Image (tube, rainbow, N blue to C red; front, top):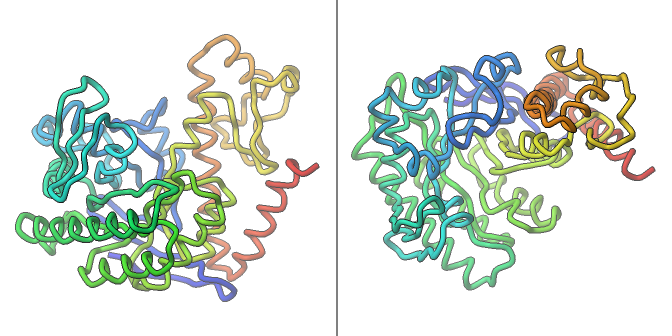
Length: 376
């Protein structure tokens, strides 16, 4: 399922390859987020044009609307969304934590009022696995609890124990209901928790590895903690994860953060940031992010960035600014395309640098230029 192809001699960065039911994924990789079965504003053909190898679907949202049975009966998520490359689905746990109203966490699962119509619902580890099996994703995430930041150690300990018990129940459901080998099987990733405590992160990683999943994610990051704590969460988890399985930092991050985490041995990333900020006029460039709606770009004939994809490079900053001010949907589409291209190109360049043995030089050069404009 996963093979390490190259390692950088100066750090823990590695280049790998995952073989999944719907295709091959080269790592390190950034995964565009398709919350409702769609990456906002973009057509699947455009995602292919970008070179997207794998996208995300959101279990919680697709369960509520249109319902996993509907998607299953219409041929599963790949057919439903007209996307024939790999898909990863999250467990729904984070969305229950962040979106649902009046939630109550018990050993059984989470009772909550959904954010659409307020109806009372219950999500359990077994149901999360069932929903994701119905969606037919290539990678399904285990159901976990994401502790808030900050939280007391006692809460983090209790939360971690619950996550481990839920992981065992997920494993039991998988073994009873899904084939363990053969073509087209769904892969399953455990999620390391433990908040900011190093010993809890180690404990979580070791317990999940003992359950033998196909890959491992580092959860509970980018939930409001300082960047230093975010990096420590990775550093306190990665050493206890298998070398021969993929590692996924969930919900991250900015371009410098992604490179820093690649250097620490992480293989997979996702974040809504590229498309979310695009809809508000922010574009990523090699010299740091810019806000295209600013007056400074009213007569700027340059493309957004010297590295822009030809699909976007034909349009000037001045024109895209005009589209935003005029309320044209094309503005959202162009910036979303551009930002995803920026992130996908970043990880593609990282893969090349690892293969050539100069990742640290690449990382430091990129971050120096990217952050220089802010400091001037």
